[in-house]
Image (cartoon, rainbow, N blue to C red; front, side):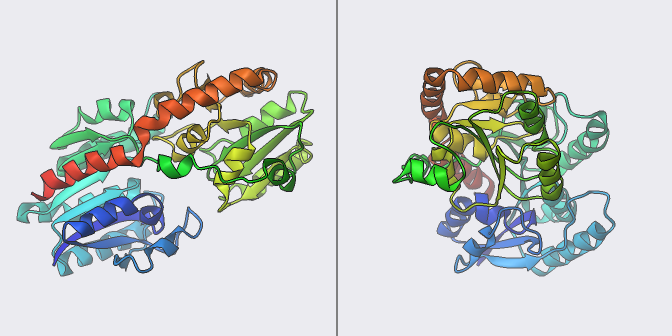
Length: 377
């Protein structure tokens, strides 16, 4: 049977974001294999979606950091896998998955192997630290020589990738979202659900969804709240990550325990979007955020950092307010402005619901089916 290999460094990336591509590849007669470190998880219990999917899994002990010596072992395991199986295509994602797959697969391209790499946001971008440009830019430029199709998900990355060496560069609307599902109302009793989250009927509810790490930058919102009148404001943060304990201490030390809640990873995040009044998205770096798209589909206005990806999704003044990711005063001003103007929030939310249509999964599927057809013949 013809075989395709998907590669990511964490084991729940494909089940979280790429199952439509899996099903498409299976529908055209390919056996789908998946190489990843299944001991690492970033998306809750998403890996459960692989059960019964027909995907053949291969454990590869990737490390997220490119400086970890253990990645040498991961490279060798991946090379052994490529030697023992005959794959017609590797489709890789995530920085380490993409780097290792292209390094391991480069010699097999002479035998007809094709390699697709989807960059969900290059680590080098406008405003990125100099060290990112010094390390990641030359590496990505080199790896593009062994890339048949480079897929990007935002305007900035697309323009930059076109200057590299991949045989073809394609831009897709991210991993997309299922709008028919995202727009369904999940809450039967909004006020009761808000109460269960500690949100009062008169509270202005801020919501952030994302991993608790330095990049997601939740701390800037805490600093903003510390600077302002917090009467009738509740801030909910959904997600897990390495900074969970530190953020809990920050909340306590800043005297914010009465208005900020760390909710952890939630399976009911769609209901929480509906319970919120404003989506706050302070990341330093994004590719094209699914969480931001989901909030748009739910009709929420956005207060987001002015960065690559976010500027693709949010139109300044119409769908939300864009601010510097490093300026708590700008976040505080945005919260005040939107809190006192419910009509503006409503208009921005309605605009976002219209704007997000172009990011429906059906649009992604159209582009990806064309890419697979061209590569696989």
